[in-house]
Structure formats: structure tokens, C-alpha cells
Image (cartoon, rainbow, N blue to C red; front, side, top):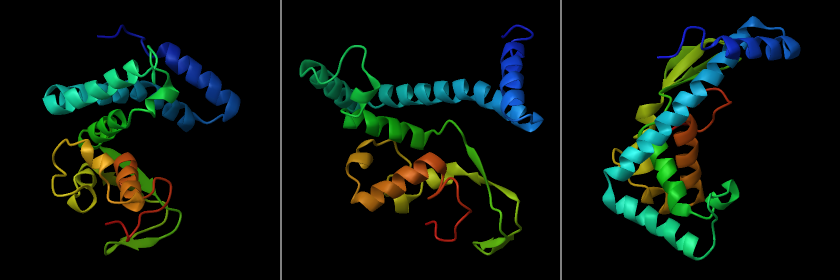
Length: 187
């Protein structure tokens, strides 16, 4: 359990930086939230990836083989550099799949500056809409009939570039776009 006043140094830094750059109390609260939440979501993502690897021996062995081969071929260093991680496609697939199956954030808020109708509902301008990302991440149309299961190979077997792009966009942001308004065209 953290000591009383654990967030005080974080809050002090946030206040100083926000006052200097923005002078906005709402931005100050958002800054503290981002600092505190970032560690928790990172830890959640790592723990879930480890759980999936430990409960899927074939996947674990495939990943271990990729890493061992890369080390033997001197394709990666120890410790591995960030630029070298791209040389490990199975590792990338494991990370994508772990984040898809157990996202560290379950809800995303989206809003739009204009009024619009989405899936038969009228949404006035400026209204925030919370999207539940988990159903999107289990969408069989996007991820295949086995969408409820951890299977990193789906990221390597994507039918074409557009299918992979839709998988990536949906996995990262719960839909085809993070910064745009909601869309009637989402599958």
C-alpha cells in the first residue's frame, strides 16, 4: 500500500508543467491521470501476455525459437534494442494478440464536434460516447471465427494489407479511427 502523500510529488510536477504550458486545472488532472494510469496499463499488458504464453505451450515454444534463432544469428543484442524488436514478427504477433484478448483499457471515449446519426441513434454535437472495446476485439468478421481465442498466428496470416490494417486499428482503438467521429461504416 502506498504511503500517504504518494501522489503529491507527481501532482506537484503536473501542476508546475501544466501551469507553465496551459494554465488549465482540467489539464492538470488529466496529466496526473495519465502518469498514474500508464504504469498500471503497462503492467496489465505484460501480465496478460505472460499468462497467455504460460498457458499456451506451443506459442511459448514458437516465440522462444524465434528469439533463440535471432540471438544465434546475431540479429538481436542482449539486452534487445527497440529497433531490433521489429525483426521478431512472432513476438510482434504475440504482443498484438495479448493486447487484443485482454486490453489494459476497456473503454474509450469518443466525441464529435458535429451532430450525427450512428447505427440508428442521434448523437448531438459535443456528446462523449463511451465505446466498449472488448466486443470489437472479439469480432469474428475482423479476427476470424476463433476470435475468442488467443492465437498470435492470425496477425501473420492476415488475408491482405487492408484486413491487417483493420485488425490493427480495431485492436488499438476499438474501431477504424481514434481521432475521428463515430462511424456508421464500422463492421
